[in-house]
Image (cartoon, rainbow, N blue to C red; front, side, top):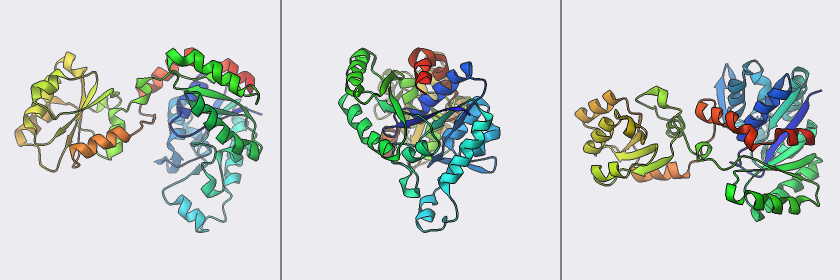
Length: 363
C-alpha cells in the first residue's frame, strides 16, 4: 500500500502545484516509485486522446509518467461538465468511484503518491465531490497549503478545516507558502502558537519568488489565445516587468527594466523599429523580453519587415493597449509543463525551502 499525501489549499494561487512538484522531486530520492494524481480539475487539455487536467499533464511530462495519464486525471471537468451533471446527463457515472478506482490502481504501482486538490476545500461540490470528501474516501492524510500571513492564514485554515472535519478527513498540518523572508520567523512562531491547540503541524513552504509568480511569454500567448511570433525558443522566458510604450521612443528605451514585456500600439512605427533593432544587442536583449502590439490598425510594411527580421518575440492583438494592460495585470501565471525554467528552479531549490522529511514523518 502506497504512502499518500493530499495537497489541499485554502484557495486558488496558494502554490499547491509548486509544493506538489517539490514533494515529487524530493520523494523520488527516498522512494523507488513515486506517482501523482489530480482527482478532478476544471482546467483541461486534450492529450493522447484523453481530456486531462493541466496539472496532471505537467507532472506526467516533468517526471516521465505519461503512461499513467488517464489514472492521474480520472475526472476532467470540461467546459460543459457541470451543466451536464446538474441536468442529470451524467447520472449513470459515479465520479467518486472513478477517483477511488484510479487511486487503488496507482497504489499498486507506486510507493508514494502525491494527490493534488483543486482550490479550497469545497471546490467540486457542484458535481457531488469536494476536496475534503475525496481525501476521506481515499484515506489520504491532508496538508493544507496557505499563502503567508498570520490573521488571514488562521481564518482561512479554520474555514477550510471545518469542512475537512465534517467529512472525516485527516488533516495533519499546514504548509505556509510564499513567505516573506524578513517576516518568516515571526510568522512561523505566531502560527505555531495559533494551531498548537488543534495539533496541526506548521511547515515552512517556499519564500515568495518573482520567478515563480511572473508569467512566461508562452503563458501570455495562451492568455490571449494568439500565436507568439519571433524566436520560438524564447517562449519559456520569464517576464519580470510589464510597461506601456506610451512615451517617446527615447524615454521608453531609457526606462527599460529587466526582462520587460512592452505593450505598444500598432501605429508606433518608430518605437517598434527601435525595439526590434535594439533586440540584437545583448545588453538590450536582457531588458526586452518581447512585445504585445495592440490595436486594429495594421503595422506598416517596412516596420513589419524589420520586426520579422529581428526575431523579437511578439504577439499581435486587436484590443487597445489599456485593455491589454488590464488583462495582464489581472492575470495570475500558473506553472505548465512548458515552463522549464520554473520547473528547473523549483527542483534546484526545493531542499532549502521545503522540509520533506518533516512532512513525510507526519504521514
